[in-house]
Image 1: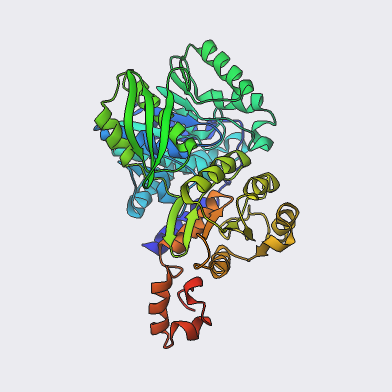
Image 2: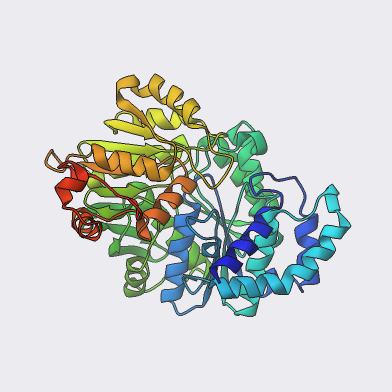
Length: 477
């Protein structure tokens, strides 16, 4: 089955890549019409914005499930496996089901490909979007939670007309596609807000807020604004996350445990609660249900502690705005000292801006490159930028994520302070690291190194030169 899945994935990824979009919905509309418009099979909550879309979608999903609804959530990109993008009742669909859905829609994709609408076959993202809508209609689900891939108006997901449109904070990102001003980007993202939609607006820069509010007035959308109609009232640190107080539709909801880190996640929780209450007709959710829903939230790759000895945290922050939130939250939640960064970034991102956010927080940084895409910035180029920001004495290099994890782990002295490692710079980097660390690609901790030493016929000290507690070994080492 694994071989079949890889073959299927290779077939899909050979299409036009998802980071390239054109201002047209013709192809996705054509294929969904052939499929019977599955995106209209149930109500939709759609989410756009520059940062926070994925975690907010997960929170919305968890609250709706606590309320007894069957959910379908579509997200991008994935961390480890493409099936993560299509989740039903909080779980990614199986590889078997993924293959079945593709087999069902493939003939219709072929028909659209032959039409060469806008002079191109269907893209990778368009095909996955069609698969998600088809899978949710077949399940069936009670509500779809749809995360926009890129932008809004021209994103393939926007063939659905959302009952609730959520706009997370807008910042400069993908400027080569969406425009180089907050006004241009906000105008593109406002495209998910349709006539009669209930619009949930997270806190925005003034330029973006003006565009969004004008668009809502133009289409007759009912608006709720963070800080005015809903939001975070209070928060304090708690074991495994934070205890938050939220402003619901009928007043404060107290003592909500959110197992995620950072004030940005607490604010995202306020957005999620507002979206769900709007979806349910502005009915307040019982406090116990809200607490249950948030307590079940899991968000891989968002300041996720994946290993303990040494501590390794994964975070997919891929722009300066997201990095600022993650860096602040990492200091608050983990207090690593020293902190070693493992950093890889896409070539179309502002690596220098992201590195300048992390420089005051990281003691040293290992620059590397993702292996699963050609979009990654090369190691030499990244090292050059990092040395300008950190200075040459604080920058190391490694050719792969696996090599970088091994090097960073060897650099950790568990007897000095509270050391830790954070892998960041892109979702793809966090995903590659998670694939290695969560599946046994690297030895977990000192105890596992002891076992590995026994397996290889030597003692821990003999195999590691006395530094066994600091080295992550590959399976075949």
